[in-house]
Length: 276
Image 1: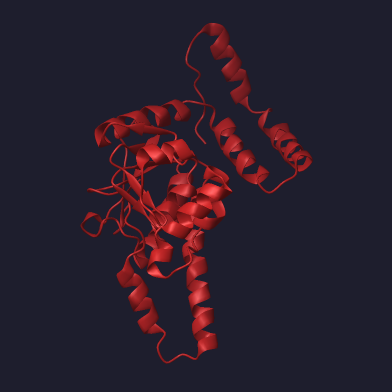
Image 2: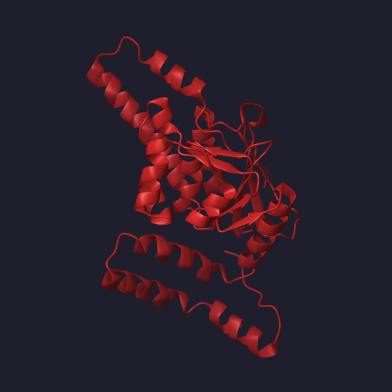
């Protein structure tokens, strides 16, 4: 399948691999998130989600940085377009545009396949919005982070303030968001924002590839079911969450995947599952 985007590049290591790399591809702008990115990103995720060859998606940045935030030129041009509108219409237009950008990043959670962020260099502002929506996060030692928005006179509005507290704790999220301070990959690991720190970008790419390949070798139905149950359970009571997974498994347990997993264990071989 041929994927063509202006702000993104899609690749995989070999035709046999079920791990697809989704690269932010604006290196000359530090992979800042443009208006075009917000249109292309959910489209690319949906295409990968519906491709049966894809087991896991890894998001990385080309060039020296993962993502330096939202492109300020995009913000400036957006405000210029609204000159002449009365305040009510201007507010409604801005609100609609914010929701479009929010949905573009929420597409990560809506994607059935696991999405992993591999972070190097800067991960600032909108970059934090993006990685907090990912299922797993890993970083190179040179990575650094900042919830930058208050420093720019903005309240972060694309998901960081909603997702970060569940990842690093309310107090830590409040401090990072109010101070906009820069913090290192090692502190990000201590906070739980990233799972592991690798020595450099090469080690990061290799290590994340191994993790992604390991996940992609599992039952596709079990993997997407696990992601869905964990995300859905955030907004449910314990009883609701248990009922949800019981309903989900009432269908999944009838698939051939369970039989194949048990047979592979008994025969001491690698399980082979049908694509999804």
